[in-house]
Image (tube, rainbow, N blue to C red; front, side, top):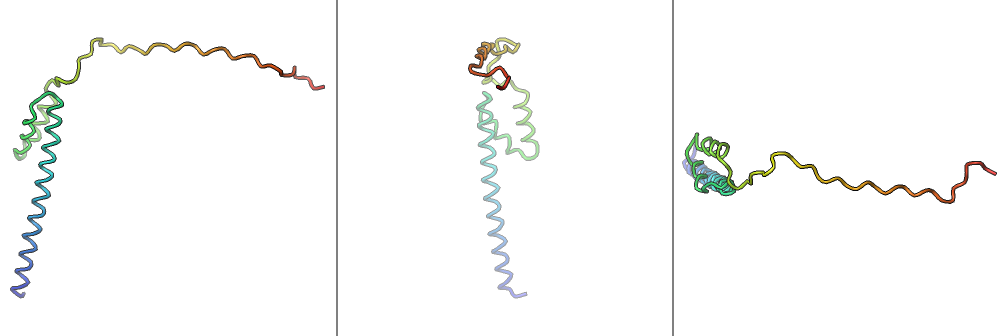
Amino acid sequence: MDPDQINHFGGMAAGFIAFIGIIILVFVVFYIFLFWRICTKAGLAGALSLLILIPGIGHLILLCILAFSDWKVVPIPQNPYYAPPPNYPPPPPVPPMVGSSGGTGG
């Protein structure tokens, strides 16, 4: 194999690895942003989303915190039973048909 070809292959591999690294970094930052928003909407500190950076178990810890914590934003219902909507008034009666024949042809 020509040494010049080896240099081209090495440069191509390094560029590909750098490109994949940038894509992974963008996805991780976007994932942290999403969980930051979820944590703040749940009434928790947004910095809890940085637990994702712990390899392997960070996602599980964050999901357990979100699953078992009290979401302070959701209002507590005052009436535990569902109140049905008010009944609609009955429809008006159908008016009688005017001008119809008695049924015998003549």
